[in-house]
Image (cartoon, rainbow, N blue to C red; front, side):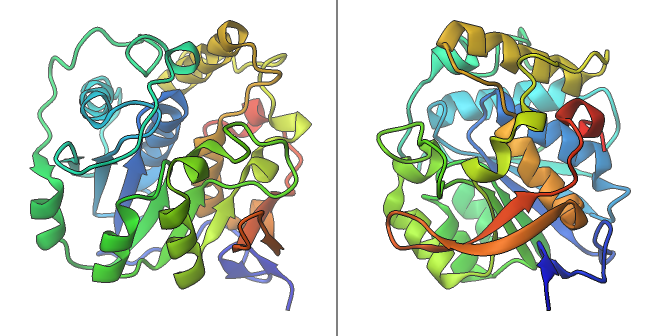
Length: 287
């Protein structure tokens, strides 16, 4: 049977979630992580999640900066969402690059001055994981260094990640950035767990390039996307793709994608999402 990502073809539309489901995001809080988080949290309650965890990891920024950015973002959410926990991973050894030319001086576009008003609970990674229970969906939007321990404890119902590349030109030392920062963890995860891979191939298609056609809305998500676009002119990138938010779309709208098995340069077999809806990013940004 031909399949869409995460569901048989005849079961189109957003997934049906159980009442006790949780949403877990592993984010190395750069601009595309911020966009993805806002998009996911804006729909979390309607999607049936009872709670969400934002695990702030190293990648685009060091872990301490990722934590601060997560707190800033939560403090500035202009909408109510499900109960949130921010997870502090600073005590864990992790790879990172501080990509200021891509993500701004604070790693998140310098959009927010501070985290005034932040009130969500913050837990250390080990404490949070030791108390974690129940069913969950997992969005991995950065390096996978900490994923094996999470997955070994309890596998998610669905694992969607942004990372890897098959045919597209790589963007970091011959690899996609998230893959490059921890190739061992990446291989361990994709070889052991069912997944949907939102790779560079998924995202780098002309209709998803916002460099020439940015969203015009006044909402927070549109503002973050426009800032990400502005930074591509600083870094000299040829296009502007909101990589991590496409992972959110793949989780929420599996019918927008087909999936195919492909092998990357390390021999990993990936279940790669291919965007088939054909609408421009500005048309799907808040959906």
